[in-house]
Image (cartoon, rainbow, N blue to C red):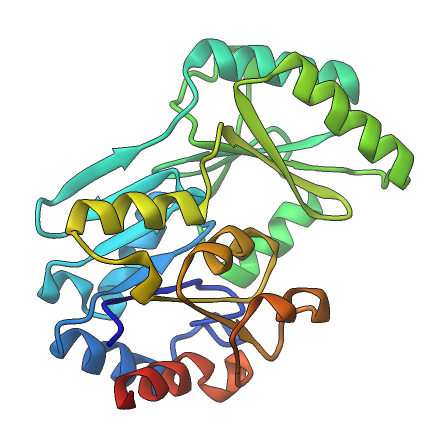
Length: 271
């Protein structure tokens, strides 16, 4: 019997219009009615994760939401953040300075609990903003930016070859041994506190709730979901995911435009 379900948002619970289908919504509510929490586990910032969790009625079932790729966990029961893995201001300042000295054209996205803050509101960010309907704020003066940061996304304005990427990661690891860098895509990286990811958040929450992570379902579609898929007992990958990720799933769910999360939940509830 499964004990808890974790689902990614974009490309997973949400369709290509960034909406939760009626089928997915009904399945999420059905699981929660049966005492099985359904937890949003997303790379979006914390407050947005909470708002999306409200759409599946998690607040009615005293549920949870995970934001910024595992750096923030919200409890509806306690009405507060119960877990935060964040960078202190010195780490953020030192890291920002190092990154922009390494390449002054890097696009930086500072993931805070209340929004995404960027050093340059480029066309790339604007396209993302329009698609996801989330809050992105341009930082007018980086030197005065003092928000508490959970994660920094680094996007290359000009693509690097594999050798330059390898060298960048090696240099980063030497300079910041207490932080973790993960390459999402060819031109995108995520930086957070050591061992902070979707999987570590699942382990922390399951331990707190006295649940068995091997009886957890994890549903995702992209690179930042791999840490989740690797630790849950029932990893599920969406049909629309890149082929290289599908080997991490025990099941392949239908496309996110074909209610893949609903099909997954119904499958496991029937077991």
